[in-house]
Image 1 (cartoon, one colour):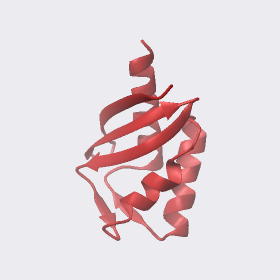
Image 2 (tube, rainbow, N blue to C red):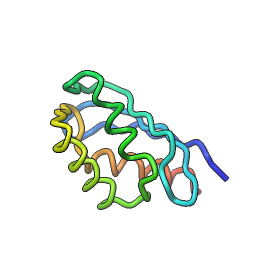
Image 3 (cartoon, one colour):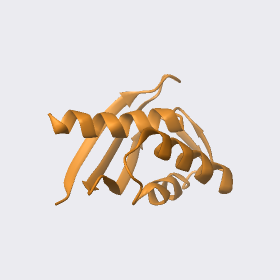
Image 4 (cartoon, rainbow, N blue to C red):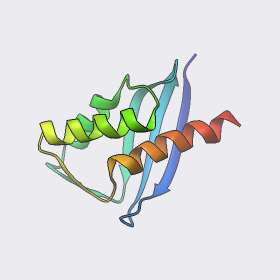
Length: 98
């Protein structure tokens, strides 16, 4: 059964962003990342979102996959890191497990 989760986080770089996703069998589905950050190329956030779909909700796996995606596609994100993204996703899951 899928559940819709969301969480807003102020990253260490000072930018506010939100993750919204479904979770099914501990995997991310339909990830959306929105907020106050900059991405180059401008449409590349969709590449990151799509690349993380199906990923297990695990801090290291999310961070490592984020880094691989941004390097492979030459994506620059100013406002949050892979660690920040992993923290937001894990926080959404923990907040909704209560």
